[in-house]
Amino acid sequence: MNLAKEELQSIKLSFFNILALFLSQEKIESKYVGCLLKWSAQLGLSQKDLHKIEGEFDKMQFQMLDNRIEKMEAIYHLVHMIYLDNIVEDIELEVAAVYAEKLGFKPEIVGELFKAIATAAFDGSNPAAVKQNVEEFLQLHDVD
Image (cartoon, rainbow, N blue to C red; front, side, top):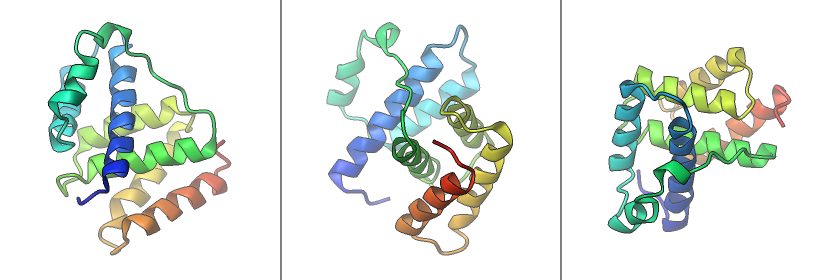
């Protein structure tokens, strides 16, 4: 995916928030670690990015998002991470579901949301259309 520098930086911040969520768990399953490592490589985390968190893993804290726009952006960033290699893997959807539920989505809504996201590429939707669809979905299901 060709992303503007600012958009890539924003996606990286979302990635670090997802990473912080999983690092805050008592135990993190290796399948989740594999997915997170894959995304970090696909995002092209730089030496500078990694240096920022080096030695800080135990201090990283998940940041709960306060409003609909922030949640929409976080979900949109998840879409980008899932589609970085143009392959939607079950583990990616599982990681995304854990994150989405932490953001306040009801479990039954998470599946519907990601089904809609997963079919967007086949529908020929561009990123702007996907972003608009996510916003409409959030409004429809009254996610704050």
